[in-house]
Image (cartoon, rainbow, N blue to C red; front, side, top):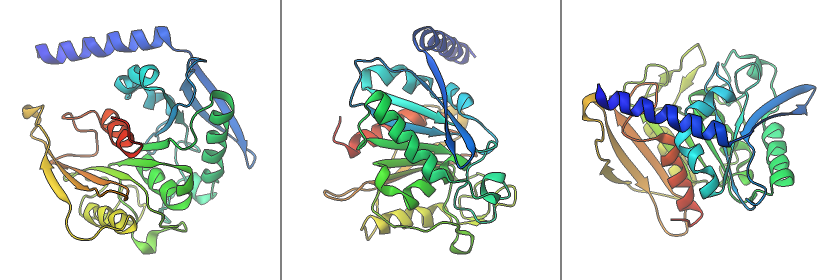
Length: 291
């Protein structure tokens, strides 16, 4: 109980500190007759050549709510020279690759590729970010959107992290795959009823998805790997939650890294043993040679 109180107090203090220091910018771009909105903390004018990270909310969410879950990474944004951008899905959803998705974004075939391409141009033009260091972290429906961007416009991104999301089966795939090598990290829970770890029907009638192992192998194959990945057990920093994490990695000089964090007994949420956003940033830094 005391540890929880301390943790909550820390988060409150951190939010106050970040909020007092940062200026939130809300902006939008007109894409095919729709104003697509996004949010970010205005960086210092002196921070040029920054890395850009898009943080994508799950189905039914929005960018502002996503900001609340990234407080630890936001606290490092200035010192690590990161611009974190939190876009809003179209009517709270993304037009990702699941053909069966009933959301308006999918039904209306909203042009997400143009939206993300123009947001990158906006950040290059206004804040001089490094266009070779553009990353995506997405959760649930946002994880599906991260896969979609990596499959359809991979030339725009350096690496992605997809959390509690699996790739659709071929019959449920609604986008053209370029199959370009890409560093990918996947964080999935074995007891997830919404995004079934072993594949099957995804929530809200969005069709069949592949298993996590098949999704992991998809990216390993695209990146040129054969054989088995290395495995290590991550420290169990919260032994009271009944969850542990196994890390599986394909990593070889000259090839993009592909990593799976298998959350044993994990559900459709973020594990407590790690901060998924800090873990993602560590993964991204490895792809650009930063320690």
